[in-house]
Image 1: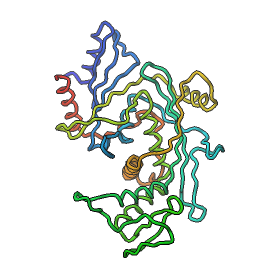
Image 2 (image 1 turned 180 degrees about the horizontal axis):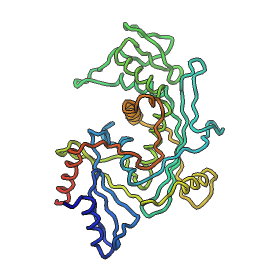
Image 3 (image 1 turned 120 degrees about the vertical axis):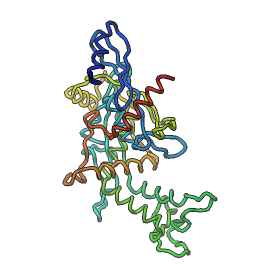
Image 4 (image 1 turned 135 degrees about the vertical axis):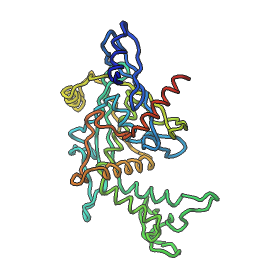
Length: 347
């Protein structure tokens, strides 16, 4: 019986002229140009992203792609994510990433990180996305508290009525509880009842931010690079409900073996030196929605759980495009996805 791999190769060799051929893989359908028996470099791939596998999530009214979803898309786009040597903090160059710590506790407060995404656009030009992020842990801690304060039940009443209150430091709330004050913008701040279960959840999340600060910052900046790179360039999706659950279709582009590691090093050096000839889109990320930051925390926590003992708390490298298969599909899920693609093509 002829294997799937052999049947694909046979189908390709039978194409005498340049044609577009769709190849079905576990992650979706890939469209390639075939001339004779040679596959040309440009690649177009249609991915199916699953909610239940963590590829997509719904932070508000619209659906977004999670970090694990972007890494799956990048298995075709092959955008190389690399760290610059230096990051500018308050006008001064510092080692990248650079972490500001509390003088007393030595715990991280702010992580400054600069990463670059080097890849090809749809027409084959080299494009560098250069992003710098200042990840302020306290800011997200305060936002998570305010989120708890705003949560409501279906009837419109507060879900956590006694978890926190806006106010000033000299006027402590009269309600029963254990209260602490955090300044937001002098003289206004938030009083939090740290005996309330909602605030305890915020504190647990805050500890995770402190523990994995660098990795969370890296996850945020990496997904923002892939989100803006023209090879992917997708920030929101419109999912559909299918037999496989909530899924979304995303089309991305790539070039097979177009940029070698030595070229990446040269491009990185040229970008940092400000040389002309390479399209560079630089940006300082000033604000990331809380839901996106929380998604990055969940992703880092999940990665931590899956790491072998002895490698805990060590950052995972994602510099090699398409390293591993983040979807972790079962055989049944892969067969279901293939069937859905075939059914979709029939329509």
